[in-house]
Length: 554
Image (cartoon, rainbow, N blue to C red; front, side, top):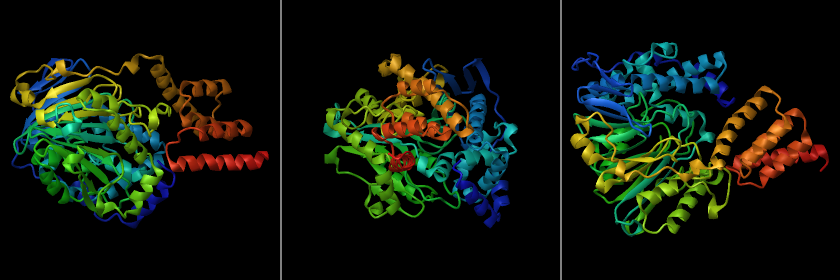
């Protein structure tokens, strides 16, 4: 957690603890539902069933889950079928928090802050989703009750994406989305691609769930999710309406409202056109800024709904454009004079990725699903410049939770398998899944349409990148804990990812901490020649260079 946030949290919590108890004690009215815990049947170590509901793991490592029923049944069935995955996901997520906030004292402050921050979230979530979350929470581990009881804790987790923006706004990872249609695609049909770059560690992304949901009200839909999560970050319904979310620049909120993933869940369950999606989004109060990228088979195009606590906008292009691009800044007239958005465009990597998507789409004539995947996997900078692996200016930042491709008019979706968006993209046909999927406990993938894994995975360069990631963690720990790392190790570290500015920056920081000022200056000067991710990063490097030159008389 950024150090400056600790006093902020203390101050905010001290200002008011009023209303916390109501939020912690609130429970949905489940008196009209059967709350009996379902009995699941074990078919194998990777396949479980409850009546027609099931979960199974396919050969690409993706879990496929099919659930149906009323809100309580959806929650209980998801919880029972994915209990081990849910408990593991919660453990991994909380370990990540412990790594970010190792101090027990600060963890206690953080727990109190979360209770205060979420004190009114229950007022902004529809009863059906609170009921579904309540059902899932029956399978939450009691090991973490020191944070909060099971139900409010699972409720809080649905705002993790939003809270991550609030607490680490300057460290936003960069989701990228685009759509092509009409003359720009090989078949003239709408195609949508997106990378979801929410990163909470490799273990968090390990067990992805492709959920196929048949609610008793609204539309059937699929989404890419994880254990315990009913919100939607990427999904499509049986009407050919798609939703994905891209983080925007947010002010620090003082209270949680509707988690964006639950807004998109409602859109997916109840909308079939862009206008219907806009109507739903407009009635919900959110607490961070977000772009909701919506594709529609009925409208044969895509649009971006831009939401924030104080504003609302919609960005559309004429159908004659046949193309829509979205990164992490707003484009609608509603935000034309928004200073925070303008600052974000100037300082972040959002505009750079936006322009890279423009480049690649201009080069790609007649887009196909395979070409969409090629764009999502692109690791280069502008004009094919080598900018280092893991650079957030690249579309493929080598950390994505998943990549996904939609062809809404045919109800086809391709979902990446590990690692990142570079594993095999597995195909699902929603027409087939919802007509017969629940009658079989085998994988419901349409494997003949799968898109192969990225050949890059078989290269020595990729192996070097994985070694670089491991060594990067080691060096950052050495810097923060003042441990020793030999110069030979630093040289090997740089050689693993020589085009990336950050390897030189970390080498510079380490040498600076150790008092090796000449070596530090050399490293910072080298970092300055590379494609630096953000303007604040560049300014930090320039500041180090100025100080070291003064000290060394250079």
